[in-house]
Image (cartoon, rainbow, N blue to C red; front, top):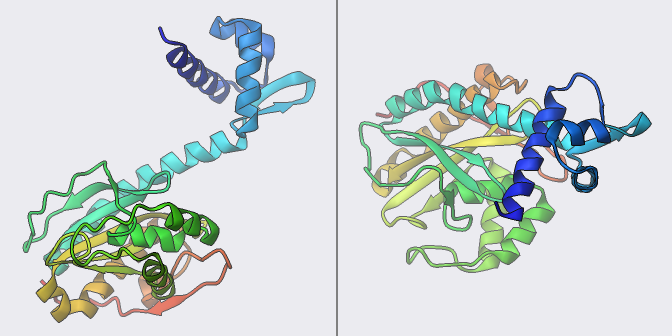
Length: 282
């Protein structure tokens, strides 16, 4: 067994032990329960404490840290996003006739985890479970507009601006302008930037803390998108508002047609007055 694999197993064991224990545990109790040397347990706990995954309380006892609890809550939240979003995605595909994708944020990326094909399906083989390019996709640009401005700028400066199509934005200043526009209006749009002939629209799903935990995205033929743009956006944003409402977001988007976009780092809230009535696009 490699040293790296052994360490990973021990970390998982510590997480399981602290998560299931109703009382704080001493270093000796942790080491003996896991069957590892006292020195190894101490080193492991020290490193986990640096990341906030483990916390030391009185009498040199250990409990699960805030970061570990937050991580668990995030996983549960994302599972909830998937279960809540599925029926909304089916309805959105029925209303618009378009392919609907659900993406969730990963570590500095967006990943498609579910799709529902519409009656006008493009039949584009976009894989699930794979991170999407930040600069050329609507979910990627949405992600950059919703995260902390400082982190967004760091990612922008690190991006490899590959020209996926002749229409892909490869200039950083132009992409920054696009991100600002996306942040202002509350949804993103790419025009043939990742697939020629295809317009993609994405809007955020936010939770009770008003943070983006996912996004719904429509993939549309460009001619159809130009003709029915406003109706498509209204249906998309209304769908995201409905999912957000079920996740505890308290804004009355589902009843008033107003959707509060996840705030930027300045904390300001921007609204889009969007009519959520059935548009009849199909």
